[in-house]
Length: 532
Image (cartoon, rainbow, N blue to C red; front, side, top):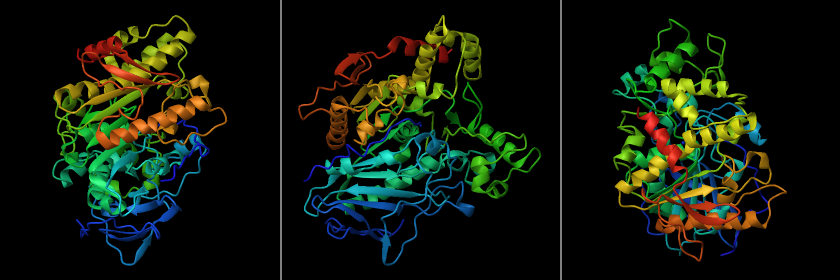
């Protein structure tokens, strides 16, 4: 098979930051010459990218019915079948969102629509091949931004290495995660998590159809970064994903003290998901307005995403994992602590400077201001948290703010996932990405900096042979893990298994080397403070 590289199609990663008739067949459903494949909802015409290798991409495949009208804020429904051959050479619409991410990356914001539940498949499988491992990519963006076909998410390099790569859209922001008593009442007692239910629907589509693209439905690896890592965190903990996923890779999972909330009541730190929903609905509909499901559905998508509530301020909504639901019966972190997550192999890791990107939008100039930012989250414990990040001048404060965001937004939750793997039989592997971004060295090894290496889609004039070697190594680790559930093999540096005692990890940077107990002391102290 021809080796397909994306070395010169590079992306500069600087962003943060979702029953029909089953055709049973014993052979691959696609024609490698024409790119036509038959799935349970109809025939698709993909685009053959490389005739020699058979690399073909199928874009804009609907995996669920449009969640519009009365279907807004409901679980995804089966997609309608079609006759003839559906064109699958263009990406589908992305889910409604503000243009923030596109502005940050310099991309044009693609067409958006509430009808956005599409996925894409890259494959180079032939009819005579053995079934290939499947990797399902879940994009980041704070559960409010992003889409499956951002420039850096090209699946060609993975497909060239024997993987069937799937990338998915899922509902975002309030459209994807609103919990509200009126919505709970009409749905038998629960609401929220619609974006995560979209991801479940996409995985069910993979289970039914991926064999037609040469993929093995019994070997599915989910992977995602930032909010995509949050999604991996949630799916791995969800009983609804049982049997649909067989391995998981969480890159910088965004798991904080506020984005995992109970449906009702309080979690000891903040209000419930329904409380957040009522406050948002009040801002959008106005004080005194009757907050019914019908009234909520009268809001148009643009108003929901960018509208201005009565107070005159943009209607902000922080999406979250809602527990006390069928998707998440208990807090996802508690499920890891109890060993209730799906018992599958896990890679989870973080970058050295996760905080620098966010600091650019939240500049803090002195210790007093830093302390004030902690009080809404930590209340009476804010001073104790601040003591963990001491500074005596502005430069030290910047370093400590970076460390604080890295620890509390990303590393702490990652450790909870990894430590929970001691309670199950499957192995876990931790990584620590430390390669400074050559295109933006001031941000260090920033949030999302690893993505161009994972997908082999680096872009920029300042990348060199070190970056090429690291990119080749990382995608090979990811692909090997998809094959076997263990990233080791092929002569690559040994990646030690994580356990709660040694807490070994692999550093991926200028050098590739092992370490242990990454920031263990400070994160243990954070956990102790949270438990008070």
